[in-house]
Image (cartoon, rainbow, N blue to C red; front, top):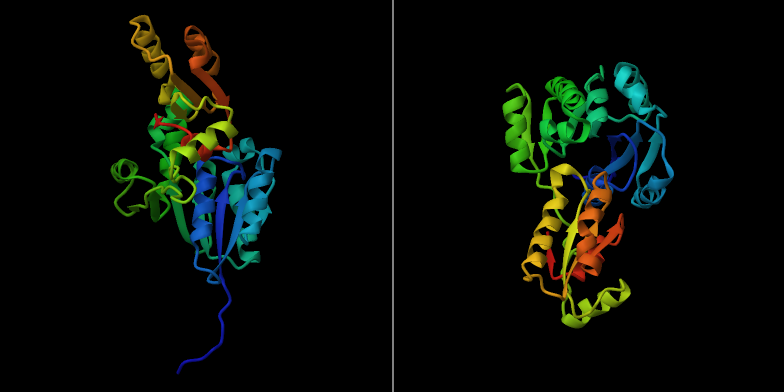
Length: 294
């Protein structure tokens, strides 16, 4: 028998450290945007407190229908007392009648692995832990974090990776009882569509105060050892030394990081041909104004 009775949306929680404009939260935002309308009620559970740099993104998520909950832990507390955080998270999930829990990044993955009630747990892995933690935190701390994460993921049943390389790594590192899938970390084809015409590109360059006649190459990413932005600058310096560097070439560097000072020193002989933009929320515009992307 067919009825017209509507069912209540199913609650789903996305557990994160903090809301801030960075890769994992962009993935959460895109997942929320793709949820079937009226079928799910999304909650964003921050284990830590909201900071000023995350307010704009929090507003965006709320406008998409998300309810935001803060548990108020510090990162140190999450590292030392993950079971205590799991108990508070457990109470929160039960209060809102949430049974579907999706965690993102290191500490949320560890905390959710200690949940005692029966939830449908899902975690997304955004990187290769051994490489990322070692580069970012050093060999000693990075190795500890990697072991801690792997123990936690061993208590999960479903792990989703953002690439096939990532999937292969976790399949080798985790017990066979853990199901490891891949869901490619997609790109918003509307936002990142190249300009339709040269006039549209020229308009973007005017808006960004970029030279209209230059050949513009853009590097977008953190200035960290693993991404090796110094390699690009050394290559340009070598070309200039050989008098093979086109005078109309311009390199834009979008992003910040611990290698920024070193990169600026390397870029000095290149003068105005290298521009450090820093952190920007206009990445799509800069890419649209560029001829090539590194």
